[in-house]
Length: 312
Image (cartoon, rainbow, N blue to C red; front, side):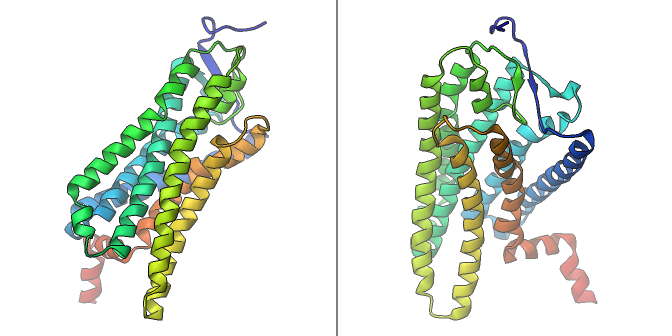
């Protein structure tokens, strides 16, 4: 018998299939990853706030990225962890819609922030004489605000439409509330929502990816012109590491949200979802900050490691 929207007040998230022992292993690995993500991103926020040397546009954006990552993983991972128990798999309709909204809003904001960070590096490397004029405090704050507004604009319309759908089932074949499995549960035609989601996802993902790639093309061309081999190697190492994060994040979210909806394989989708909800948030602080010489020196300074080294 069909279940309409007025009767449906709760969904059941199916989570990971398999025996309970395997689910406990996944729970442990995910919990450790989640805690490391929280600690590493919190450390970056703290160190970039208290160290005056790091009060620059680049670290301002990195601090915003770390804050976004903390919020992003906290929207989904605690619920994923709770699906190990049968009681923890239940989520209310409004809880599901709230999770869906923040998941997409934060993800879209992160896309726009990636493009801002790439543009910041482009100005610093390719336009060094104009950098301080173009990338001032007002520009940083305005850019971050525009990224957040862009995230809301590309999320709000389809979220409202999804929340008003009649649903004929309650089992969400995923780890958390995501639009593809929710649309599969709808009793009505979701073509309009599919097209709106495709358009908004394309707007957020492809435009920010284009800005990011163009910025890095100019950066790489400039790096090639560096006369010293050591300077080129150092710059290429940094750019290559940044591009790894960009590639993993954009390739997985593009696969999920910027493609035809006819060939959904939910098992594959759940594997892909792990990368952009769990893997990239833990990679970002490692790639962008913890490999950075200035950040490492600041951490050592505030932990007293430099003082101890000098005394010894």
